[in-house]
Length: 325
Image: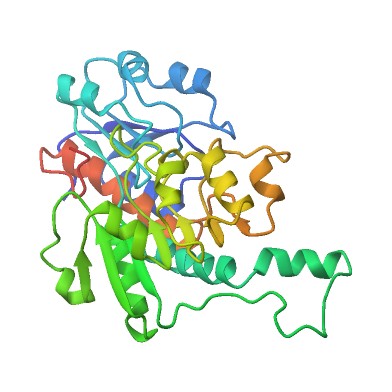
């Protein structure tokens, strides 16, 4: 069933997958597609006036400037992202404008990548490749490039939402010693993953692999700093697939370069893009990826469809499938 009248939707990025655009059009939408890559704020501000909804498909600030430019008729906004640290949620609440996002559908692709980082960091993928490229491949030393295994390890999660649970589900057949997690409150379904809710200090002290998959908030910003790293095992592998802002990157660099941590795998950094001369890239025991967590076509299409459905529901005066507040 289509909505009662035609409605206008600004699409902030020209590479939003076609299925989402087709879905919106099938429900009566006129899509106004921004053409700039990367998205131009000037173009967005020029085109957003008078629209009924916005599909926000990038990470530029989503704030009062955009909402003012859109006008009082704006009825819905959905990001095409899990995290919404770039959105002024309080401003949306104040104006009573529905805001959606797409957290649930990203969990599988990010979980796969997180396990890849656990292995890559724990088994010296970056250093090993560098050894080959610099003719330092050693063949006569038994203890050369010894790594750590997931098997029989304590796996810790900071945050235990969809991504962490998808990782924990995958690890059920990896013969891990135990799974720990830290969240504000215990998750009722943690028994499904044989996971134990523990204080932050215990998470730091016991984890052999510590995976960060929590939102960036004022409470979590730079939660992982020199004080936190000092409490971790020297043999621990640190993995971040959340947001770079949860980590004090200079403190992480010091912990890795001084041997206080064994290795790290990062899909997120501060800033993004990371400069080519960033000190963190010079470390042999740090695997860094350019924020590839959701970069599969399957997941990207699912994110775009969820964002489109969030908008359609709001236009039809129904609850969004995935509201941000």
